[in-house]
Length: 251
Image (cartoon, rainbow, N blue to C red):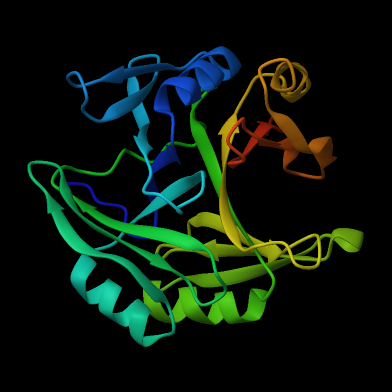
C-alpha cells in the first residue's frame, strides 16, 4: 500500500447540522455529499473522488474543519504528542474496515487528528482538480512552539519564507522533502490557533461572491500572494473557517 506519512489525508466538517452544511458547500463548490446509508457517515464527493466527510460534533466542540494527518503508528504518535505537550481529546480507536485514528489539541491550541488508514492514502499529484483540497495552513499565536512540536513529533522539517509585511511563513516538509502544510502567526492578537484547509477553485473571486448569499462571511477577501495564487478565507454559516485558492499557473 502507498502511504504518504506526513500528508493531510482527509478533511472533515464538524458541526451540529450536517444537512445545512451540505447545502452550503454543495452550492459553493459544486460538491455532492452522500451517506453510505441513512444516518451513517456523510462523504464529500468532488466528481468521482471521495475527498472528505461531514459529521455532527459533540456538544461544546464548536464547528470546525478537522484535518487528519497520516502517520505510520497512531498509538505511538499519539503518545509522543501528549508527551510533547499536546492535549488528549479522543484516544486512538479503530474504525472497522476503515482505519485507526485519534484526536489531539497541539500545544498552541490547534485541533489535529492523526490517522492510519486500512487502505492506501490518496495519491500525491502535482496539481489537484478544482474542488479538491490543495493545502493546509496552521495559524498559531506561537509559531516557534508549533514548529518544535510538529518537527519533534511528526518528523517534519521546515523552510522559512519571508512574506514582507505579512511576516514569516513556514513550510512544513515531510521526510521526502515534500511540502505538506504551512504555518504562520495568527493575524490578530487573541485569535485562536487552528488548522485551515484550502480548496482549489477556478476563480477565487467568483466563489467569494457566493459566500455571503449562501449565509457565510469572508474572513479574508480575495488577495494575491506572490508565487502562490489568489486566496481567500471564509467563515461558513456555523463559524467554521475554510480557505480557497486559485493557484498561479506554473510554467
